[in-house]
Image 1 (cartoon, rainbow, N blue to C red):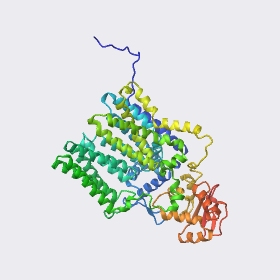
Image 2: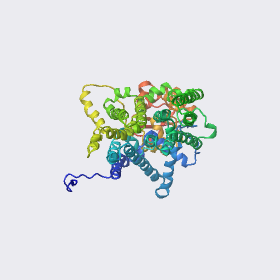
Image 3: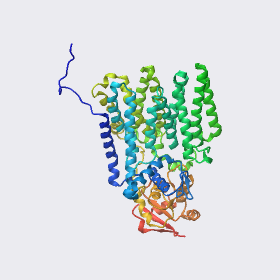
Image 4: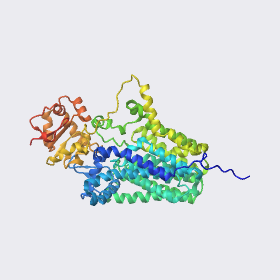
Length: 601
């Protein structure tokens, strides 16, 4: 019997190329995220961390040493920042390349738009490739399409790819997607295993937010070696060698020789170097034992011994790193500042303050976890490690998001391709036609988040409770343009609200005492105590610290709290326009809601 031929134009379907969909989705995202910032001024779209990153890049271009991460104008004589030159370097290169053509200001502005846009393109491509890699050849085209669209709708992550987003979170998410792509296929490809080790070390050299996910995936690689032995000896050794060599090389690139073993618990330093290099060496040792004696008990014993030695060495060398990364923050600052930062809040606080957003933050990764567990149970033995390591990585990210809201962005963007791949794996009939795309869009973070926002008003009718404050950046004196008039004053030391510090540093040559960074205990405490003190007591501190200017911002959360905690303190009196005789209001740079006072010497 001859095959039936369907006439052209009668029910035939044509699918757009994934590359075209990726380009269109990327262009729409860049326009949607970039246009408001470009229209209002991209410099005013910078968050506090973005503004501080810009200051750090400018200092590097001005000649500050590669290994010197001190921010000398924050709590002078300066604070050593916990950030990485890995992010500073590409931003500085872009500015240097564009500066001869556009000048410094416009080169910076274009870099603020270009950098997050390029990272968004990389995230879409990696997500599409992860979904494609986990699908059968016949399903890969539609899996790519669906993964691109779902990633483009990963609302909690998109804020980190807006114009002006130059802090480290977007780059870390891209590196994590690359890590998942490589480590999930490492069982059969030693080269990908080595690349996964490199990406893990590179991510940790930028920041520690992805450490739980990388640790979980690394544990899965050890489990694979213990279970299969010599069958996976090459990829296991490649991963261990890649992790060890990369971490050592990055340490030499980023740290001075004398600081390689320093007990730095909130950034890349001795503790993380021990975990990375030591973990890679431990994996190589387990592989060596597996090669010498090819039985399961030998591998189990070797892995238990190597793990105990690594953990013991870590606890012995860096016992302080077991505590919370915010343990060093003064309790007063936890209540006054850190406790109100939304991205550090656990799910219990989000449920109280923003219950309508719970579905948008948590529903999609939780749903994807369920699909991945089902895929682990039902997949073939050849694909089991892929699903185990992917599920473990996502579970770690979801756990972090329950502890701190900041983890929700990475959990959602990593879940996007895994959700699509799991749907393809579990329900093959869904892939036919456009069903996969429709199903994926139906469960996307944007859809689930929209349901939460739509349903909650009806459920919460008549319910009143506290909410997360969302202050206007300009009214709360956090924008660079609002701080720009201060540049007309002679450079000096400014006592200003915590969240105003980075904008003042970016817009002027002044120094500030307060800034939203957990290492800045001294400067933040000086500001809080001084502004809560009586004018007489504050005068002595101002003189001792060499303060030249005081800035009060009635629209800032700091000012509200200072007035509430100390109704007769210096901040409260200045907010009412009642200045002691040693302060003089500078009319030229003051405006409604924002007052600048000169300290008379």
